[in-house]
Image (cartoon, rainbow, N blue to C red; front, top):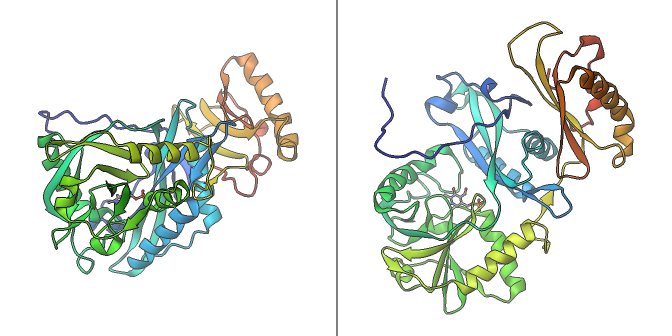
Length: 404
Ligand SMILES: Cc1ncc(COP(=O)(O)O)c(C=O)c1O
């Protein structure tokens, strides 16, 4: 067995409490794949990185869901991976996994990954969608230094950049490790023709004489949803935005550069290959407009958000593994508050009152009021006699998932 390299400081990664896998929200540790499945052995997966933003009215919106769903479907189709989940089910799964873990002080980033869990070289394939959600700081990311990596983006007929799959991040791994030694968290990848493809994990935009340029997909750039959104915002802001090939030397003389993508929105570049860059007035204004739209201060049609309307039973976890109906367990139920969503809560509020009353006397239940004015997340912990448990059919709307 190999041991971790202690000479470099690794970032500490979040381990959320829950994960969506095999059709339902489950405790994090329950999402497992056998080491021999193709999803593990050959890295046969396709995925999406998505973002959720708190809104001024306290709701939590997921960005560009139809476009993420469509792109995941395209990646799966290109890989010959079955993926027959409907958009509604995909959207609901993403909302489920965020709903039980939200933190009012932070936005969330999600990764939805479709793995091959059965099958061999395209025969008898079965897939499973796994959704994980992580907390992400609000507001603009700090500016960063970057440079060009010695690694290249592979061509479309070798490793198509259009497919968002884990094995497409091989050059990214090399470049990350190379960049670390030079103090660059992200690096620019050139294509085989020596022109700019993009950053290793995000799109690239550049400003020259007030015009924004981005390389098209045919240059080896991933088909970025954020680039598309920014382009639409620029149209309304009166900023010219063109997609065209970008030479390496153009980055050296560019007025402004940014890395753009769902995870970090837009990161302005402070220095490129050792050359300090000045302020970024054009991209700064676009970044402000982008965040204003995502965070609901100034909505824009290109920044489409979906919201969760259903109430559902979002998780149940045994803390001591006791199999009895009276064991210590934690139940998390996300439900609308009584005065808001009358249709659902008329059933739920009765139960909630009953159970909270019961739990309060035992002193082992807590409710978490989410900043979403429509919802509360209730945790019931401890004794919960089986005959009194809320029936999932009462707690779940059609889009909810009962975890049993
Ligand atoms: C290689 C690469 N390019 C670009 C992007 C940006 O794509 P999007 O804006 O859709 O997040 C990503 C983000 O996942 C990426 O991994």
